[in-house]
Every structure is written in structure tokens, then in C-alpha cells.
Length: 328
Image 1: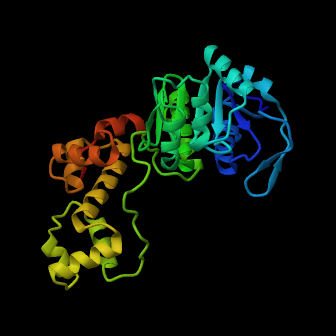
Image 2: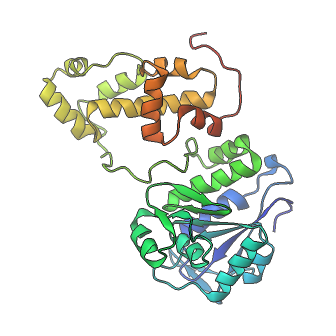
């Protein structure tokens, strides 16, 4: 184990290990981060069954520790599981319950929610998992309310997350809770991640945006992104592309996956996020800068797309700084 003295994070190893899910736990908690000081996390992994253990990608894992290590863990992470119908060993269930009873936090990524649900500790609470597994989780554990939309959820000291990448969001949220926003932002930067997402954001887009990098719409998109505060009426957009309104709307939607108005709102919300994190401008000023007109309009569209208010987003994802006036 590392020479730090902080909370001990233990990731479970099992036959059929989800390599990506395990990898992100090791990356967030196990990578040396001397800039964080001696109180940073300690990280280890332990096998929940005998073996050499297989991992996705043709890897064989030789564990250094066994399940007894869970007796020392402050945070236990279940990085996926073998399958939605795979039983959870009784001794693992017992160890997780005992760990929870003495105050440890339990977290899961993707299908790892099936392991935590098997303990009964989620009964009467809400959990999330990858949307593909939501129906199976509801069926197998009817006492658990399954949220198939959110990126992650908490039920006391039990935390669950959705598909693989949502696990990164959950792990960074744990860092934020333990060490503050600056530490969480530092970890996110090391991972080359964008601003950390809140748990209430949607797992997936109902209509994924197709990649169409070359189209007659592309120059207009660049101009709009560069001047989101301008008045981008539909007639102006069509005129700049030298198209009729009907043709423009069809071509725009084909190129971006969204109608012009929805695309513009999404871009304005994303720019608002960046300005909120900088924490240099008031919400009224940001609303004007991104073309929303008023703070109320920004709040409406921001909450609809981000799942939280602009102020809540600012409070969670930025360090306090003096508020300045745009243009100064």
C-alpha cells in the first residue's frame, strides 16, 4: 500500500473482472498524487474468490489481498459484476454488511449495483445502474427503487453509478466530498475530463448527435459558437447559409441531430457552465453573455438540461472567487 495516511479504498476483484471499471478506481484512488499531501487515499484491491482471476481483454489477475482486507476498508468499490443474473457470494454479502455497520462507504459502478443490492442495504432506497440493467435490477430486487436516468445516486453511505464513464463522475464526487472542490478539479484535470457532472444529469441522449464534420452548416456553427450572445433568429441562420427556411432546418437537423433552436440552447447552456465555474460573473451577466436574455430564462433552460440550477452548479464545481463585471 502507498505511504499516505488517508482513507483506505478497496476495489473488489472477481473472475470476469470489468477491466475499465477497475481501472478508473485505481486511477482515481491509487495513482500517486504527492501534491495532495500525506492525507490522500490509500488504495488496494482484494479478491472475493479464489483464483487466478480473469479480466476482460484476456488478462489474468493475481490478487495481493483476500476478502479479509475489507475489514480495514473505509471505502469499498464494486467495479462492475459478472452479470445481472450471477449470484453474489454469501461471504461477500456478509463482509459488505459488516463494513457498512462499522461506518464504511460502499460504492458501485455499472452492474456492481447488483452486488450492493444483494446486501439488502439498499432496500427502501434509490439506486442507479446502467440503463440496460435497470429492468433486471428492479425485477431481482423489488425493494430497491431504481433510477435509470441519473449518473449516480446516494442512499446514506451507499453510492451507485450508471454506465462505465459515469463511474468516473461518482469517484470524483467522492473526492469532492472528502477533499473539496479544488482537489476534485485537480483529479479531473489529470484525467483530462471536462467539468465534473452532477449525479442528476441524464445518462444518455434520446437522440445521439451523429458526427458530420464536413457540411455546409459547419461554418455557421462556428460563427454561432463564437457569438452566442447575438440574436440568432431562424431567418438569419438560413440567410447566412443561403437556403430557404425549410431546407435550412432539414440540413441543420441532419448535420447536428437537433433542430436549430435546441442546438443553440444546448450551446448556450454549455457556455454558461464554463462561465459559472470561473465564478467571475453574476448569473444575470452570464445570462446576457450567452444570449439567454434574463437570469430566469437561463435558470429554466439550465435546470432542464443540467438537472440543477445555475447557482447549484456553481457551488458544486467552482472555488469561491470575487465576482467581476463582464467587460471589465
